[in-house]
Every structure is written in C-alpha cells, then in structure tokens.
Length: 193
Image (cartoon, rainbow, N blue to C red; front, side, top):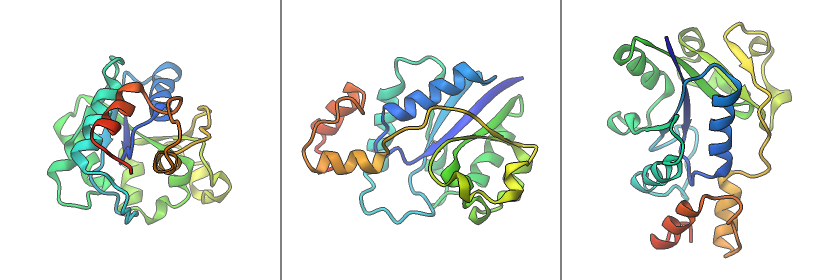
C-alpha cells in the first residue's frame, strides 16, 4: 500500500525549510510521497499578510519541480472556506482508498491539536508524524504516548515563513532561505512588500 505524507500549510511563502522537511520525511521514514496541501485559509489565523491563494499554489508548484516525490494538491480550493483538515482527510481517504495517509505536523500545532475540528477523529483516521518546533513542552500528555502519534527527529528550522516575510518587507537578502525560483516569482509579482 502506498504511503503518502500530507503536509498542510498556507506556504506564505514556501521556503527551503518546507522542502528540507518534505525530503527528510521521504529519506527517513516509510513514506513514498509527500504531498503539499496548500490551504487557501487557515481557520486559526486571521492573517492580513496572506498572499492570494493562486500565488501561493504557484510558488509551491515551482519549488517542488526538481523533486519527484514531492507533489502538490489544491484539493482544499474546492471546499468551503475555511477548510478543515478532517474534511480534506475524509475526502482523500474516500477518493484514494489504496493509499495510507499520514499527517505531517509541527509540534507547535500538536500543542493545540485539541482545538482542531474533530481532532479525535483525525488521529483515529491517520497516523501523525510530528516534527520539532516550538512548544514541545506544551503538548498535552494524551498525545505524548498516543499509538498513532509518532515524534520524528527531523532537523529544527531557525526560521519561519513569518520571519521571511518580515525580512522581505525590510528589503534584506533572503537568498539562503528561498529557492531562486520563488525569489524570482516574489520579485516578478511584487509580493510581500
């Protein structure tokens, strides 16, 4: 059975850290594919800095072109907004019953996972692979030993999309943080100014 990691995010913008994590999961787990699920809107964030969904989708498409097992999905674009992870998971599990899906998640999200819509159903439907981020000490005890939640020793990133947007607004160099294709796309479309 094919095993696919689902990497949800607004990817505002997608950066080298996202790609490094996706590739890390491919190389250090039993995943056959990592699918980037671009979320048009995060139900927990009222982000006024969120670039248009079509720009974020295109940036992910550009960023993953060199990686055969990193793929892209716009599945959430067809759902009412904000879309919820459980809706997407149920849809994908029904549409692709031959695939075993795994939810890739940062520890910061697991810290407030109990606020997610139907979180108990999510963790019964798919396994979670959790990578290090801030808030590891804030994870509820019920998730630390859960049989479907697996903590992965992926490299911790020192930057986020939020910090990259701040650097871009300051007009500073972000060449080491973004693929060149993304930097060119941002400049060509006058994003994050």
